[in-house]
Image (cartoon, rainbow, N blue to C red; front, side, top):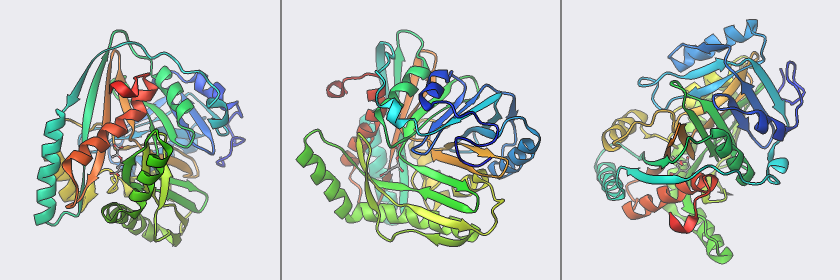
Length: 390
Ligand SMILES: C=C(O[C@@H]1C=C(C(=O)O)C=C[C@H]1O)C(=O)O
């Protein structure tokens, strides 16, 4: 299959129809280039190691009647299995965004309670602890996250959240996937972990953040301040270097600008770098590349092992499939994997939202807490929450 809507085995359905056809448990990914719906589950690939999972997917796809395998990688493969499935049917269309912007918002239901995990003051304390370890140890960066549990009066349909996210985030990577146990992960990530097409590889790492503002002048100033911030430039450089160094052994040619670009989502400013390369071996799969890159310093830190240990100590919750990856791969190894952030796990009447941020020795705990609050806004909007009340 080529990565076009007209690829073999794929129907060129209208993209918004794919959104309407999505049901909880399916895989869905909309990028600016294409919309993918992998519906139903014919077979779950069980290999726990993400690298071997890629090999298993390639072998399974050689015999399968569907053109892609799709699903999620957890943040920590030692704690949770990947869930990559051969679907029952695959539908691929062009960009959903022009059509999605014209949709009307769907009602998600009535929220009856929220509970932050940990309490905001504890997150501030965790950031302060991390800052002190960053000042004295080998760590350069660690990503600390927090969760927010929202309870609804009635079961929440992931379909409604996905619909609203797609409608509101024209440049995001909007995704949904079934998780082990029957819940769904749904979100809009700004960040492409990796895409592979023939012998071409792409990544779009993001690090360095500032909340957007309603007032245009304040908003523009916040973006400019982010672009000029030495701390955020360093936070971004740690990430961009790690992505480039991980991809380099796979590539005969690799390009990344030395200075990141300012990237806007409806709720956040970020620094982003477009990484493009040519692979030495066009048979290396998108899933293999995703496994090599994950976890990048966008979600874990540098060095990876020490950062993983520290965040495991400071975060009083399980990240599960937040800060992992969601994506698909085909028989030629082509595919797209996005970093699973700006997302929520939907389980019946309960939603768990996640948001994190990169901490450096120069980070300020109050600002980091505010950054996670701003990152929750992506899901709040899709849930119909009033921004003033949150
Ligand atoms: C970890 C998250 O976002 C990541 C962290 C960022 C940062 O620290 O500046 C920016 C973009 C993402 O790579 C999240 O949204 O939960």
